Image (cartoon, rainbow, N blue to C red):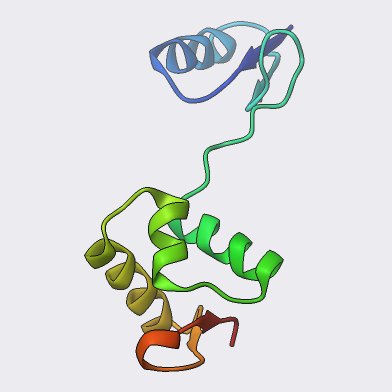
Length: 101
């Protein structure tokens, strides 16, 4: 038996128990019933990193537009990523840009 599940839900748990109580089968997680793979939504950090990989840098204003957040939220996210070593501050002041380390 083959079962498709887009993600975790109450039906996933029910099907898992049913498989365990029967002869078994396979559950394909992250696949729709039509067989298409479901791409999970990107986190804000993943979106920022993808932008930096494509454009080689990101400014706070670009981050705001990319994520639809305020300037304060964009600055917080970029600084948090810098502190974790995911980004490096290239310039300070008006021309501040974040790049990959």
